[in-house]
Length: 229
Image 1 (cartoon, rainbow, N blue to C red):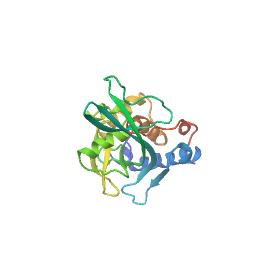
Image 2: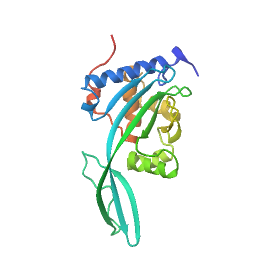
Image 3: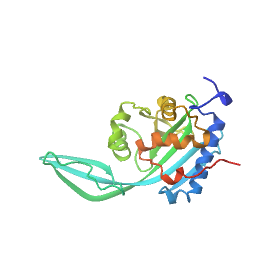
């Protein structure tokens, strides 16, 4: 595969990724800042030039549900969406759903890096309050972070690739990431005959991958141009 300046859409070279990250930060600033968009912070961590990271941090409320059916008891988590008023579990089997009224607030760090192998962005993410290892942690991550309509696709390595577990490229700590194996083909498919410039790249890419892991883009980010002078 070509490298450096020879890379063209849907791939990104290091300089293109740098442009994309800075353009995204400018969009956030133009929209009034991260907190005005419902996030905690947006930072471009480029101090280590070999592994620059665009970090989006947000909090989410998780409500623990207590489900009883006969002698069986199950606990699961469901995200509380402020803009939705729909039941997470339907009572089709005459089961009794009991909410214990306890909400947990979790902080999520979404770290976007450039894959040196695939030459596309890759999304690393972690729940600060949740252990990152073991099958139980993986299930907890799915229940806390991945909307139900996307869970099966991600478990089966869907259009954007499946969720994998590895080491964060900058910090070296364990983290989950959406595998970038299908990113290039997905970006090319959504763009059609259009060439997406670096300034717009992350908006399109986050539109594909973000919703799968509870990172939806506010509409205000799509207003106006953020090209540098």
